[in-house]
Length: 361
Image (cartoon, rainbow, N blue to C red; front, side):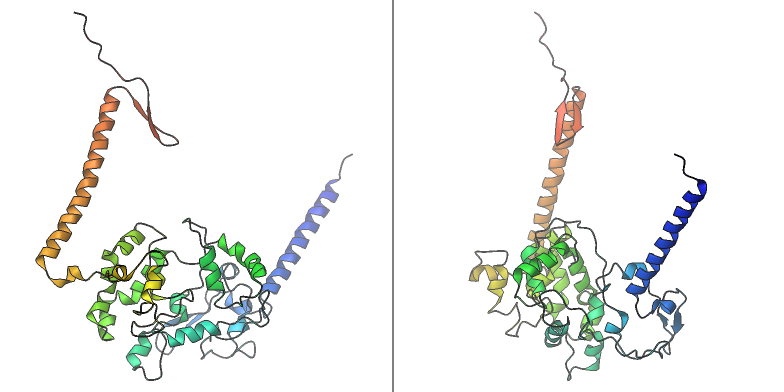
């Protein structure tokens, strides 16, 4: 039975038109307020009063893959009351309630709990803070750049850690439903790696000009350098996800409650530091916590300490180089004897080696 060309063309046209209609309906559902009618254009920008370029372009594909993809524009930009709207002069308030109701929750989602923790922390702006400090303190968008979901590049068991973070905003009731709701996030790495966290904190704390401007102590001024010299810093640079980064010691599972040492709520307060160390070092005692996490010995100016530090470094690197040299000599010797190196499921040598038979006397 032959199918006419007209019928084939008809069905192809019908499928194409249907797909186009569905794509349009999905686009409208993602942008119910039709904000992208203007904001989809890359040329949507202007120069403000200070001479800076303000870019208002929104990449729809990227936004639909972001963590805020289910939130409509005016859930955050609540000050917009008409479209087309007037020039925006207000900033987004991250403590606003969203129209989204998470599963098992009895109220609309809001970041207010996190905002309250942030305002009480060392990074929060206080009414009596000098203007230079207010300008330097990071706001929400300084750390949170609305990252896209990324593939898991580092193996990490994050179940307990992820649940602890989720309970900062979501109620603890309905644990089973909560677990079912968030397990898909465990397969997608949404949090930063330890190396990225250290890099983020270093943006400010590694800026000596900014730190001196804020009159921080000499010890705090060297915090980044001393951390990088510590065993934690070295392991993080090598890619370890188990070594402590800045957040692991300076904040609880809420992440935003970073406080100064003299604050009773601070994780690094003398009354709390032992519990922090025991997160990784189960048998940590008073002698253990007296060990400096940010070693200042290198900065003491003592020539003996510097000499010992240099000697240990040379000893370590010398041992590694000697081991590599021995492996190279072994490789050359075996290849000379006729054996070959096979890199498959480990490293093995195969092939018969030349043997020197004793001469007949």
